[in-house]
Image (cartoon, rainbow, N blue to C red; front, side, top):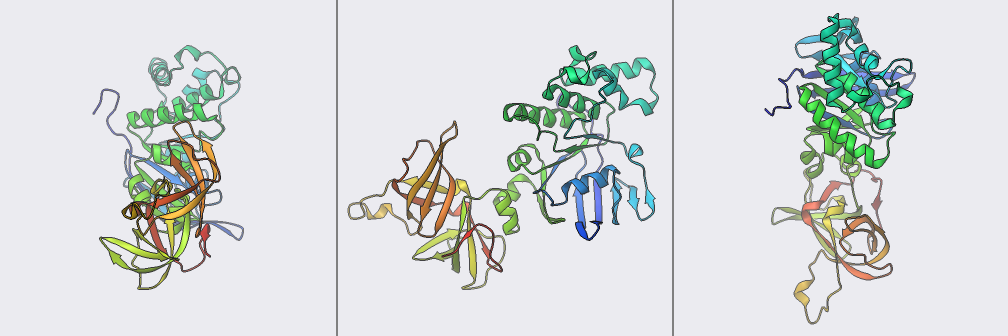
Length: 381
């Protein structure tokens, strides 16, 4: 344990059969979720997936219709039994900061520990320590309107960690900030929360943010957890097409599974044979969607097939550069081929629009799922 870290104070959170309906619209549909103690868990999903409802229910701001919540061995909520929010030993960082405008920075942070009835000296020490950890001790006497957006978010973070809570909840706290500040505060949230020893639950719709922060990620879709795992598990072995699509695809091709080869699944797309991985068992000759990660595609010059026939593999496709965008570290390309369009294809150099090229697909970045229904983004021809 590093000198910056404290003894773990967080507890595991266990949800079973959690449901919530607003009128006739189900927000959560029988969610089971285990949040590891003193780890950083991120719930990732689009708007309307249920992540905010789940967070607010854990916080005690809302009541679930069915299901139970345990903090460690303690039953927090089930049926008529409900521990009030202020007695759950948690804190929350909101998207809009939720600072009291008439209080100074010091007073806002001290407000979080008012119920602990600490002596004034102990309370002042804890508040000063929290402000020092977020780099705002010099702003202790300022009011929120005198601070920048980033400084206000740091006050909210100091308020969240000052009382050594066992659980810290984050409600998309970075969505109102510009890109550079968002990245810097992401690092601070990760390091300070982990150093506090608390369990953290963070919700976001931003895939890059989730992967950068999380020890484990839960993917929500239409009120259900589609997959819970480490960032590596979620990216390399998505459980469903939705998980794969929401965590980043260049595009997809419609094909037919024809068997296995060299530890990979073999998919026929038109006149081409592609090797790929798959998370579910595939029946012979079943129709599949071949989902392609951006990192799975390489751009190559079209070789002289007569002079260098060995340089072309069965999975290479001739393509045309449609668009190119500079991304600082290199260039993202949009390409069209006989089977559809792929986006976000990276190369260190810019390929001019209209250039014919060879598109090479890496089997480790391709995923095959049965086409039980038409999947969004599939390029069927």
